[in-house]
Image (cartoon, rainbow, N blue to C red; front, side, top):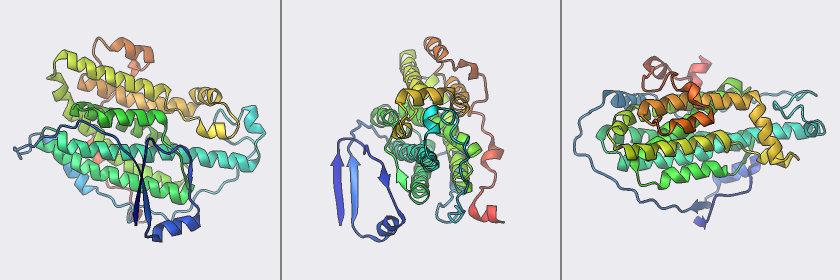
Length: 368
């Protein structure tokens, strides 16, 4: 029997899953749905011209159909997790040299590492649900036929991402952490705004750019071959999504009145402030005796934290410039953030088709 519970906000406690509960959940006929209501003044539109008007958008749509991987068939869920005992000097960068880390037992240190991974991957799960809902909105409100088709294909991509991260968290991590409040703020802003092009900016340029930076960091550092495979597959989809956003928005934004361009540039700037300064989670560190301030300071100084912010803005800033949102009025604000050094790097408007058309690293291909 379907049971629906409506709540005022997202869960605040960690959800735990053991092997027995996983088996129960997979076979139980009773399902409980916990949902939080949001409302949006979404204005949809028909499009009666079914001809392809943008060859690049149509080619991205065709790639989405061709590389439609299946998380059940194409991911090798039987890959063994990495097994390594933490040494005396092992641990997360920044934390391992802190006096509070040194007093933790080996078991506590291993649990810290496991929970940190689960917390990060939980944000991917929640972010992908947000992307799923925004993409579905774009099917209705995108003004052209090509964009509606692509948004439909992206909706299915995001559904796969939700599915694959949820399964990884349940089977590998056995826990799901609540959504970061600042990530929830970004998603709420994009989902509830009535302007379709702000949804494009918020999702395709900003949130997808954030996801790519995080995925790139994990893909280069994770010792887990299963996670590396999962993230590699998801990154291929996200690369198409960002390319779609840049190519579609650059012509549209240039045709807007300057006042509306400045409104969108201000939104992009405010989102970048959140991404740079407020998406650092301190939950796990606080569970092990660190203060929130200590965790933020450690992350800011760590090479991993700095690398993530570099990956984020070296991709995002050139894209914002390409679509016309680094206006003369907003540039000083971005300069205060210290991210304008990236503005002349490669943007995603120039699509590397060879990369997007390369064969996927699926279970069958990896085993061959």
